[in-house]
Image (cartoon, rainbow, N blue to C red; front, side, top):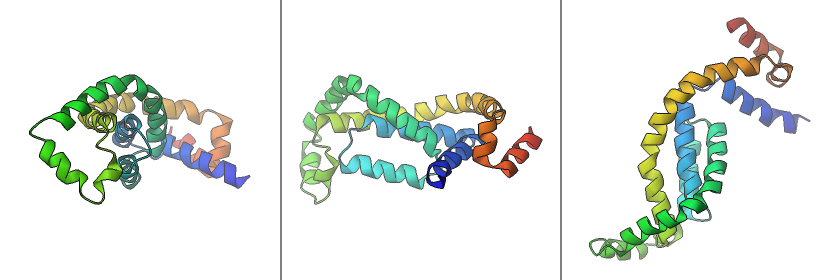
Length: 170
């Protein structure tokens, strides 16, 4: 039973107790970037490592990855156009050839126009997503935390001592 309860307890604690709006916004922005990039290549793995190594909220990041993974096929035509432009640009052809001849670069799948275009689109949208989501999380995270603290399930999952601390701090 603890195998099931422990991850729920950790996720609830991270969402309600221990996350700042900055960490939530960073989780959203990095989750958006990872969600836009097609999976199954070194680029997605490297972005996952960056996410795990950062102070971003992993719960928000995971939810955002799932949401943008479902939305990314609709953005593939735009990603393909961006990637085709970058891969076919005459000034960049020599760079792409040299990079592709390195041992690791082919595993990134940057020779695929959709992967390259999705990555560039995600990088371009990274900072605006962070800046726009930070005030939203600042406004609503406290309200959601107070709302969730009212339920008995929160007391059960977080434990009586956590719930008492949360109840007295409200």
